[in-house]
Image (cartoon, rainbow, N blue to C red; front, side, top):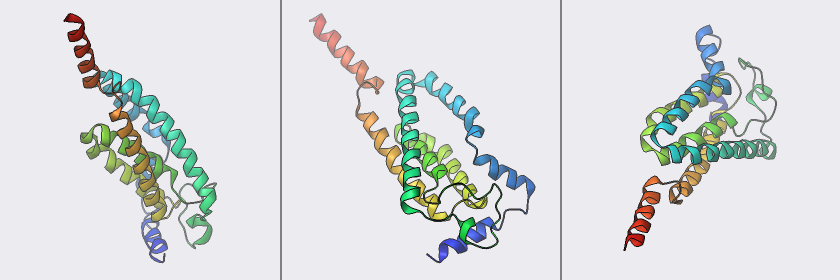
Length: 192
């Protein structure tokens, strides 16, 4: 794909022109930077939908660990060199990276979480997807990935997150309404 290196160089060429923008893009790639927003979102989730949060949180955590592992295996399977290993004049804002390029695990993990929440709570998309897009952009900006690495991560993450969220929606114990309905029906049957 001839366009992939061209688009990569156009985005990566922005690096080094603004120390502030460089710092923001580096921070977007650090998982620790999302701890506070994640804890706030979890607190809100517990407050609004306790049962769903107590089931959904460990489910999402296991899913993220699983897709991160799958992403690492795909990197070794595809063995695509990172742009900084094959292209000249790459602005390596955070270094070249330790493994192969495809897929971007940052993109994979964030898209998994965004798709998961989008299915469960459609209104979350206006917050989560722009964040996913900015984090994906940052992976190209800092010199770590091609655009197709990011898009591939988004696609895979979207599939995994969507599938698991739909499975949760079908599980009656996850849905408070269904559990409450079953409890009412059982109470009605016992009252007769």
